[in-house]
Image (cartoon, rainbow, N blue to C red; front, side, top):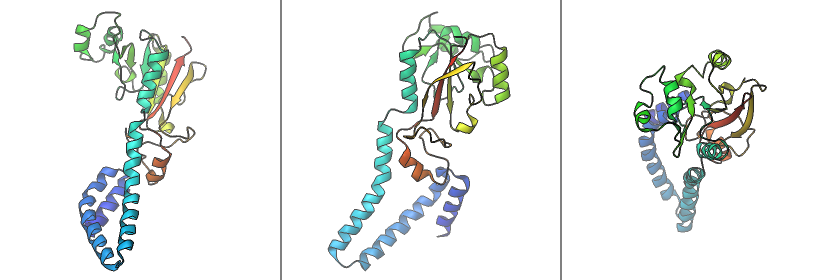
Length: 241
């Protein structure tokens, strides 16, 4: 019980499921012992069948729910499809994160981002012809290579001072309260579309990781409100375009 209690305390203290993993092994042993004792108590055969049906049904919900979520197009897939449909690859697309983005920069913008990091997509630059956009290649600029997109002041300063052309901005974030483009001027940036992992698009809660699990004690309840995996994604159109 001490191991189980320690696991529970660690798990709920840090609010991350991985800290709960050490408690799984003793939980399996304790659960098996509990089932054994219950089966001894339940004398009626039909009662044992009902008991097993109830347990299996309760345990299956989470598994079935997760499989359903993974079968749906993630918010990343939705955004990728929308971008491929409505934004030509030669347009300049800024992204607030480099991680999770399903696009490779075109040669034109690779050179721009190599000013800070000379090894940035260096091998791709060698083989990619100028003005050539095979599938998933487009003029995308990772803002993290030029400024700090998580610092509102730095991001605002960059957009105000940069001479780079801005056609669209792709904003990807875990927490709506700290979204990089949250305070962007509506005069300069028009939000075209938003993607959310929740059925209720008005639900704004921090997402713990890429799977769409929620970094809160009420995670099982919010999991019910999810309809797909992925993070929050907004796509903006720059006023200069």
